[in-house]
Structure formats: structure tokens, C-alpha cells
Length: 220
Image 1 (cartoon, rainbow, N blue to C red):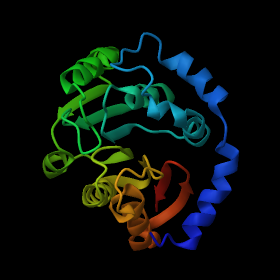
Image 2: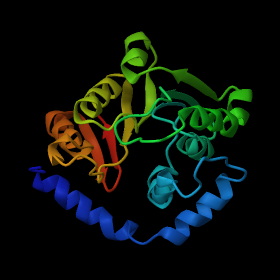
Image 3: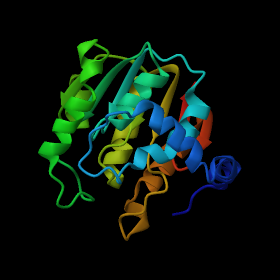
Image 4: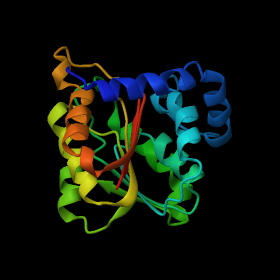
């Protein structure tokens, strides 16, 4: 997909320090996901990134966080744990996209509601059941941190990246999930294509970048 060499080198540099960290991920998982409810406990993709995220995010001070794509709440719970004074806005349709087949999204949404109830009760989390486009059209809030894990189709990923960047504060962070996700046979239709395009287009606005299975970008 014609990935620029500077992105490839960044990925290689970060690959080995984060390679084979399953035990460290499990320790973090056991700590923060007690009593977590899931339709399939084996499908816990987000937890594979816990070591990488903890290492790169633990020193950040985040007050206002936006999450595009929430599923059953694993990412929201992690962010609430690592950014303990943050307010989290979760945006999801709870209706799925191309990669979701035979998934009962009523159960997925019910699990999200139950798993994040303690965060809603203390007013640290708000739920927005809508598309990301609808959310951005009505949003007037700026954020210190935006996590993108919604619709993985090429055009929507690029749209979410640009919309998220526009509401991100200076020195804020954008985290993009599934950079190494290859669902579509045409590789140009996967998230990495859009992430590469975004990075090239906005390179003069990027302060710092860490590329792995997820991509963490700091805005100037």
C-alpha cells in the first residue's frame, strides 16, 4: 500500500519492545477487568495492546476523552483506569459494520451498559448512540485525547481521523486502533491506507508519533 519509509522505520523501532508481552498484558487485564461481562470472553482484541498503551499513556494528563467505537466497554474501562480524572464520551451505533457477522448487538450494547455502569453513575462517562458523523456534526467540545476504533472501512477511517483531529486540543493525542488489520482483500481498503494518507497530509501538524499495531499521534 506504498507505506512511506519513515512510517515503516517507526513501526520496526516500536515492534520489538512491544513483541511477546502477553504476560504483562494479562497482569493489567486481571487488575482492571474483574467481573467484565462479554458475549465471547475469547474475543478481547483490545487487551492485546494493554502493555503498549500502559507504557505510552501512563504519564499523560487527560481530562476530556472521546472514543469512537466502544463495543462492550473494554477500552473505556482502561482509559478510565489510566486517566482517573478524565471525562469519557463514548460514540457507537451498536449495530456493527462489515466485519461483524452473526453478532447480537443487543447483547453487546447491554454488556457495555453493565460494564460501564460504575463510570456512568459517577458521571465520568457519557454514551452517544449514533454514527461518528452525526456526533461530529453536533459536537462543540474539544478533547485532549481521541481514540478511533469505529467503522474500519477506508473512507470512514479517514473521515474519523480528520474529524477527530479538528476537535483535538493542541498537544492532544490521537490513538488509532487496528493499523495492522487486513480484513478487506483489496489492501487499499483497510485502515492502514487511511492512516498513512492522514499522516502524510497532516505531517506538519504532528509533534510526535508512535507506530505499532496501534498508532499514537501527538498534535502540535
